[in-house]
Length: 171
Image 1 (tube, rainbow, N blue to C red):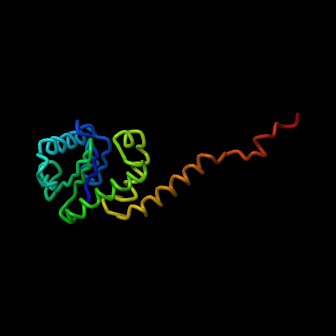
Image 2 (image 1 turned 90 degrees about the horizontal axis):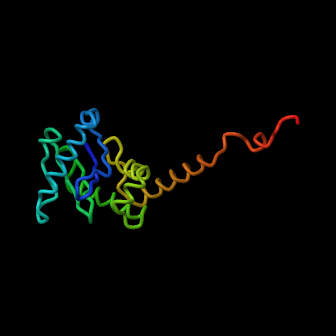
Image 3 (image 1 turned 120 degrees about the vertical axis):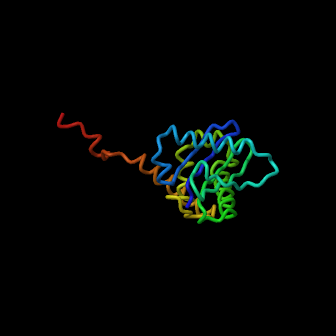
């Protein structure tokens, strides 16, 4: 099971953090922020030439692992348990980044900050409830486009029919 997905910049500011593990989700926000700071301190202290896989039992409990990828100014991080394959999780980060690149044409930190809702939509199409749903970037993009179209259509729907809204009464 995937326990958490995080995106943070190289200064440690979290840009997206989604927790799937019930015990972590129920923690107060301050404790969740402490976990994010702990993850960043581990990542920022690692040299560039070491593995992207870590045991992280001290922060997320027994049998917890972390995989990360550093792109430009962002860290993409997945925390998961022993039931998941480490290489598959690294590939999942690649799928997420490729999908975001398609959404925003070369994703950057500002895209994450200003398109928070779309970021969660993309993430929810890939991972939901800690389980991997889709690993094909094209399929994720189709689903995200359909959701965007339905949101746009629902925003343009008027609750009052035009025939009634033009009616002024018996005057």
